[in-house]
Structure formats: C-alpha cells, structure tokens
Length: 404
Image (cartoon, rainbow, N blue to C red; front, side, top):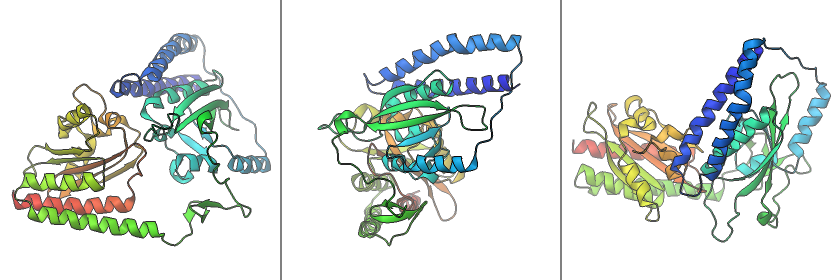
C-alpha cells in the first residue's frame, strides 16, 4: 500500500505542476521558454518514470521503509549550524513548500520563518521561473539527482543591472530521519554580476541575536519602538483617507464617485485599482472602473476591464460573503480570475500583493468590491494599510448609496 500511496501522491503533484504550467501563456513573448522546457521535462517524466512504475505496481505490492533514530544532540547541533550558515538555505518538500529556512534566507526573501513555513517558496520568485523551479524541485525529490538553475526574485527589473535579483539555486535531495520521502535542500547564491555588491550583515551577532533595521529580534518578536518611517506612513494613510472622503463629497454622480476614488488610490497608493459595483443587493456586478499607471501594457488593462466580476473568486467572496482579503506574494494563479483567452489575470498584471474588500453599507448590504494591486518589487500591502482600505471602501459604499 505504501507504494500505491506514494504513486498516487506523485500523480497529484504532477497534476498540480501541469496546472501551473498552463499559466505560462500569459507571460510576455520570449519569457515562457523556461516553462516550455519544464513542460517537455514533465512529459518525459511520464514516459520514463510514471508509466513503468504503474506497470510495476500492477505486478507487485509496495514496500514499507523504516528509519533510524537520530541522536537528539546531533540534531540540535545540525539545526544550529543550519541557522548559522552564511548562505541562504531552505529545506523544501517535493511541492516546493518551505519546511525550514535559515536566517540568511529569511533576509534574502524578506519573509520571517514563522510566516514562510508551510508556504510555497515560489511566491517569492518571478512568475516566469516558478513552474521551472517547482518542476526541478520535484525531480530532485524523486531521486533524479541534484540540479542547478537560475531564478529571479519577484521585483521590478533594473535597466542598469539586467542581472539584478537573479540567483543561482542549487537543489540536492535530503532524507530527513524517520521519514520515508525525500526533501530538497536549496542553496541560493547571487548571480556573478551581483557578487561585488556590499555584503549584508551576517546572521546573528556576538550575542546570538538577529537584527532587522538595527533592532534586535528574538525569534519572530521585534523589540523596538515605533520608527519615524512608521509614524510617517501612518500620517500618510490618514491624509489619504481624508483626501478620498473629500473627493467623494464633491462627486456629482455614482460613476464620478467611483472614478474619483480610483484616481486617488492609483496615484498615491496602488499600481492597479479595480472597482466592481451593483445597484442593489441582488443586482448583477459590473466592472465600474479600472485605473493603472500610464506605462502599463494597454492590452492587459483592456483584458482586466473586460473581465466579468462574477467570475473573479476574490470579488465573489467579498460581495457574497463579505470577506476581506490581504495576500502577499499570492501563489494561486486563479485568485483574480482569467481573461477572455483563459490566462490568469494575476500573472498578466504581475501582482506581488493585493487587497480586496467589500463595499459594505452599515446595514450589511454589499454594493460591490474594491480591489487594489501592487506589482513587481514595490513594498507589499501591510495590515494597517488594509485596514485603511476597508475604511475607504465603506466611505465609497455610502457615496454609491447616496445615488442608488
């Protein structure tokens, strides 16, 4: 039975990887080559591995494996060494989900260990390399040998440094004690062009503490007073809420209120602003406004504007269930729905973080949804910012109700 269960799990993994490869159609021309290579690799895996294993399972029963008991002190020593390694190291399962990462990796990907555990590492990588990275991780976990590939962090390319954000990922199999399935140890190195960049502070000082912006961190707890930058950001949010309310007060119609609100948010707060509305609680949703910077691809803007909001999962959750969503490095390509060609909008917009909140009246009636996106390497939405968006959404809902 163990062999059958492992084979079924491998088939499920293969199916998920194939679904992700489909999203490569949304990438700009020239970028999907790594995804195409990964697709050919997966097809060859079916021919060389999955089918012979299926025939073998029909003829023989699975075998159960065992493990040795590790020494407790040895494990503690290895964990300490893992955390102290100066290079970014991540322990992944066969799906690319983070099981453990050291301090250097936490700093490289700008995520805390407690948040990263149980989440796919591909969320921190550029959309164009996610499928290839996941495919190679799965191959290493299957025991097909160590691999090395180039990946790129999710961020805005630097024209003066084409290799900016590019990493060399080295993948090697690792069998944890008392486990039947292999894990993957991933080591990341900066590309050669970045080797001359100033070194970051080594993880851990003489007292065994890690610092973030000069403040000591004990585990996941940052023991520091509010910084001036945080106070400034809070004041900026208050100004934004005030300016938004002022624009809504001078609007002469519901559509003008939507357009004024979208303009304020896009100019000062988000890269993409999408507003979906309906006239009453039972009415159909329509896409009332789409605002994006002038340097965005017009074809992508038209595709987003032509979407049916009723087919966008996040919008449906906000309107029908009143749910608010804050996602940083969203992993599921379908959260923002698809365009008319079936390509995921999340991939086409290159969104790195998003907020979606309902336009809800005090009575509980929901008149639509407000969706904001930030793209590339821009700072992701924070909890405080999501709270401000929720307040502005209530103001917009009251303005819409005024003309309903």
